[in-house]
Amino acid sequence: MNIIRDALSVLLPYRCDICGCHADADNKLGAIDRAYEAIYGEKRGWHICSSCLSALIPQDEDRRWFTCLSNPVDEDPYADLVLYMPFSYTGVVDRALPAIKFSGRKGIARLFGMLLGNMMRAADIGADLIVPVPLSPERLEERGYNQAHEIAYPVSRLLGIPLADDVLVRTRHTNRQSDITDAQKRMLNVSGAFAMNDNWDVTGLRVILLDDVATTGHTLREGASVLLDSGAEEVLCCAFSGNRQIKNAEPF
Ligand SMILES: [Zn+2]
Image (cartoon, rainbow, N blue to C red):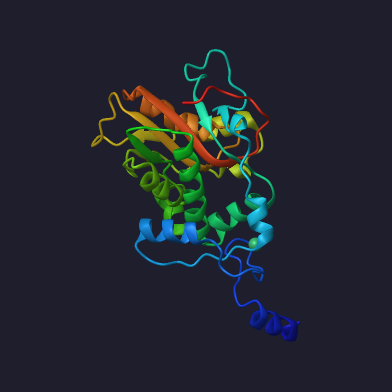
């Protein structure tokens, strides 16, 4: 195997930034490279194999808007919260998102953020402030970065909307939503998990609350309810990807 791998590494010197396979194409991502350099002030040189590139296809325009909760309940005062989520959690995204969270692949989060930002710009989505869903201090320490921030930062730069990491604070450490399968337990797990930072005043602001993944939507709903209770005029929930049956909502 080593001989084959060595031979491949000579023939195909680059590894795909997403799946790690020997990339079968030289860097053809000039536009992404230029955007990255403009945002981060350094050259990155992306290499993505044709298989990952062809699988990174967003949902059709009319299938990117959802109600935030997958199963909204009538008495929920935030039942009409809207979620913008352009990628389904399948294929290459399904493999890449766990790599962002658990294998330190921060670069993929930045790439996804650039894709998301470009789509949001094309959809003419505007707001006054972008707030990434915060991690608990324990989880931030463990991971070294907040993947929601890594996705949100290029979105903020591409849309020209300020980003603020510290508007919402975690009031307690919660279990991973991905470890909980029951929707009711997911809701309870994040209930009261966020509070406003007293140094911020969001009165009258339109806020984009951003996370990497939305499943039942309870985490985003919980964060959005705190912003709205604190006077935010409107909150658009936004996630890069999720597994959802189609429940369309009106664009923000
Ligand atoms: Zn690949």
